[in-house]
Length: 144
View 1: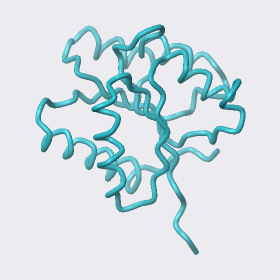
View 2 (view 1 turned 60 degrees about the vertical axis):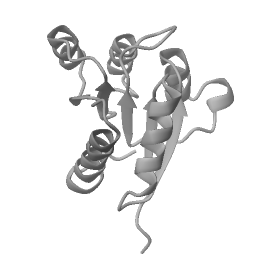
View 3 (view 1 turned 90 degrees about the vertical axis):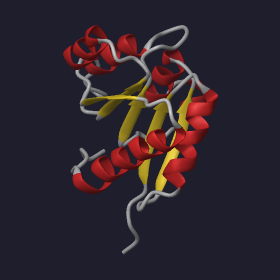
């Protein structure tokens, strides 16, 4: 039996962080199919399978940045948790913000966890590895 491929949606407007995340996940112990969108409007279109995303696979996990153009991560989190068909999606807030207010608000809006992006490359790689190990090998993800 072939192992299941994990579908991940990365909502990230910083192309460098998106590329680094993609690079780190290619080294994952499980097969990861990473899709990247650059803002909250695009993320909701993807999740709702609208327009060019009509054939998009439902992600097993969403990695969500908070500070983005058009619709920020807080608004996306609120909208996802308000929709019955999306509310069970596991969401990891992955952001540069260390603000207590952002942390509390994210959890209040239904984030499953909150991770602050470190500045250094090695530390960022370690964070992605920890997310991969926990969410893809330890956690039982909801069925699609």
